[in-house]
Amino acid sequence: MRQLHCDVVVIGAGATGLTIATDLEKAGLSTIVVEARDRVGGRLRTETVEGAVLELGGQWVSPDQAGLIATLDELGLETFERYRDGDSVYVDAAGSAVRFTGDLFPTAVETQNEIERLIALLSALTDEVDPAAPWEHPRAAALDAQSFQAWLEEQSADAEARANVALFIAEAMITKPAHAFSVLQALLMAASAGGFQHLVDADYILDKRVVGGLQRVPLALADRLGDRVYLGQPARRIRWTDSDVTVTTDGLEVHARRVVVAVPPNLYGRIAYEPALPASRQQAHQHISLGLVIKVHAVYATPFWRAAGLSGTAFSPFQIVHEAYDNSGHGEATGTLVGFVASETADAMLALPAAERRERILASLATYYGPEAEDPVVYFESDWVSEEWTGGAYAASFDLGGLARFGAVLREPVGPISFASSDLAAEGYQHVDGAIRIGHETATRIAGELQD
Ligand code: FAD
Image 1 (cartoon, rainbow, N blue to C red):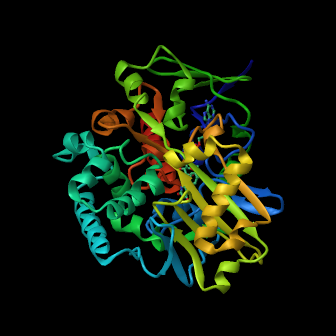
Image 2 (cartoon, rainbow, N blue to C red; image 1 turned 60 degrees about the horizontal axis):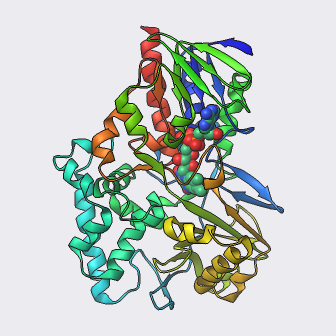
Image 3 (tube, protein in one colour; image 1 turned 60 degrees about the vertical axis):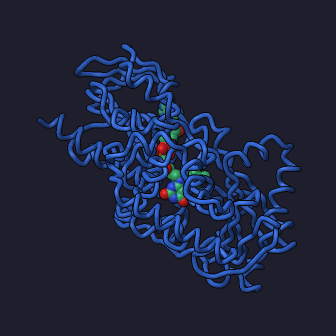
């Protein structure tokens, strides 16, 4: 076993871990990053599949994501706007495709009014929630005891309005059924994105992409860290005292003053801790889990929907693919659609043989864009749930009651062990922006402690 020594060992070379190591090195502290996979980036991965460059994981940048934007600027990475000219498409419960512009889905007027009323209610509630401490809301316990679905049913008798409002948070963000997470969890999601209205406005939340792919961020950070990053080294064990740690991987024993576990919370239990973590942590870690979404990429010879006056933006709470976008690459002549299949629909799709799943998913895309969508040149499904070192997508959320009960505990260090990832972030929660923000915060705190 190779012996290594540093001030801080970071477990996980995703956006969070690499931001932490970068900041600590800048502060004059020595770091080592151990990464389980043979690549950096975690949930960021830009890959060429049958000649098509695809963003398999995170990709979009929105205007409020100051942490991510600052990193992009610092690394000199360029962005480009998502194609959005033309009409969007909404598919109703009967399976009819209706063109529309703006944010409001083209439902019956009464349903539109109901959707607007629910959004206004949620916007007002969101404004009461501090994303850094949602558990401090005066009604935190009650809001965390009620499922988002139950709250919607209490507020409105209009099933289509409920399904559409649920879509913004459940399928599109938390990627769990609306009965499986609380109102408080939904409000945290919205507050961390700067307000509920931002989640409704696809042009805001899915504004820009990085030329060459968002994985360029972790790749560039890792490049600067050079030989401090060790790939193919899953952390198996953390031995700790009040003042030091030893992290054991398959080939290394790293001795340090601090460790940061920068992996998604569902993987905390894959590491053995000696001594064991305190009781509250062991409980907390069992109440937070990743959602499930399949990101589907379909590449065509041309972006044929543009000629038909379509932007590529499409939504339906009734379709297998609940949302889809023009995801063509920068300056490419080919056209790429990206669609998302989430939570219980994803369960049903994953239970099918691959060929049948592909057929059903492409048929769903055809409902939005017409029969041409059924015949892509390249078809690929990003299946993060099958990845050992992720286990779901996009990120982690608490079960009912978990956020009020354990949210604060989860962000506390345990002796020399800190935990950080986008799943624990306040602003930018579940996003790369949150990974970078919590990375900076964690590094600043640790540097302050070690330099005292
Ligand atoms: P991760 O990226 O998960 O990094 C953790 C790292 O730890 C991984 O590299 C993993 O291999 C490693 N690891 C795990 N266990 C161990 C161990 N025991 N030892 C060593 N290493 C270990 N965000 C956006 O902002 N915009 C988007 O458009 C967007 N879309 C998304 C689409 C998909 C399909 C997915 C999956 C995510 C998306 N996200 C998006 C979310 C975003 O990608 C994540 O929030 C962010 O990348 C998480 O970064 P992280 O460093 O906190 O965690």
